[in-house]
Length: 175
Image (cartoon, rainbow, N blue to C red):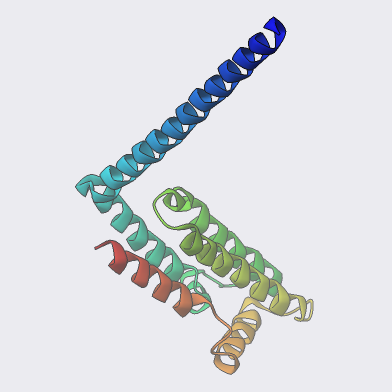
């Protein structure tokens, strides 16, 4: 009979201990979520953080403009280059612009950063595809003409305006 009472007391202690552990976990999770929310509110409403985020959207809008194919063609010199050299110059210009602004992903939403990344990848892909269809002896001017023809014949193929609209939308949300 004494064993039954001891066992029942042991079970009661275990149940109480588990209850205390459970309540402590709930308290820790609630406290952690409140702390996380507090940090987020402080950083979002902080004027310095807001300024950095707006500057990031501004820089990414400039990046989108600078790596748009039509703007690249006017900026990248093609004097005396072959189509292959022009292809490499265009891709190098896209990558340099992108890498220069890589740190801006910290300040923008993952969706916007994916859009910027997709624009870069799409433009590299278009340049590579069009260049691969050029004859070996083609000039940079021939490649430029192919790219311009592609842009004229496929106005909706470029992500450029969509990315700019996404950047505008996100920037206006935080203002």
